[in-house]
Length: 241
Image (cartoon, rainbow, N blue to C red; front, side, top):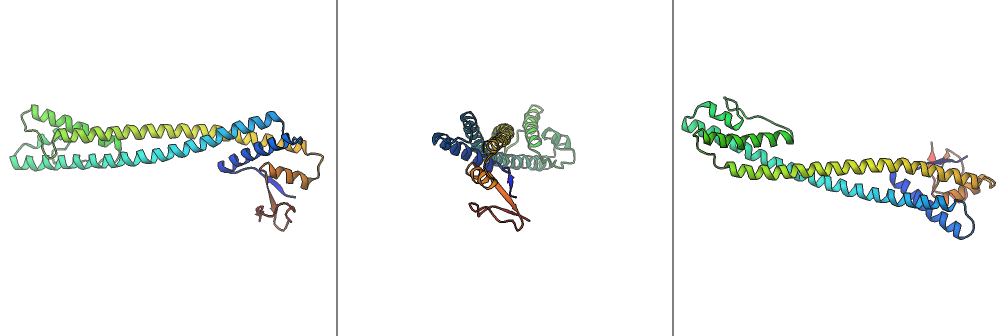
């Protein structure tokens, strides 16, 4: 006997709810109700909320991807400026015979080896320390850096921090959308189960093929065992091996 299969993904869940609400209302209006008006109203409201949540999460995902890309580009530019800053600091120290200790103002060890950060927060912290160190070096009597200057690095750092903040905000919004969708998914699964239970009760006096035929008009799908013939009204159902 064909076996009912509940929706397995969010698109199918929404499709079931929308069809159940539409068919249910049509049948009520025609005087042959298989679902109560209360159930239809609840299904319709949940379908609208679920459909909107799916749309929202798609929008948030797109926004998140855009913000992450822009953040990565900004951090890459910041890293380039910081590395250039370090390179100029090393060259100037060598050219002017400055003590190795001057390199520590810019976050470099005495041997001048460049750090190799990999995370956004590391680059932001290092860049901020370099800017602060350049100012401290000037107070200590060393000439301010140029090409790039501390001001140029500050501008790039500010832009990178802004992009990092916007990416973090996009992450939070996307996570919130995911949480909301998860809650609605649970509600949808329960609502679909309730619809099927109500249909089974309402249709209990009809023969099984008639029950399945009507249930299909409400969005239900059925699977067949291998070699089992399809119902006459159903020629497109999935076959289970």
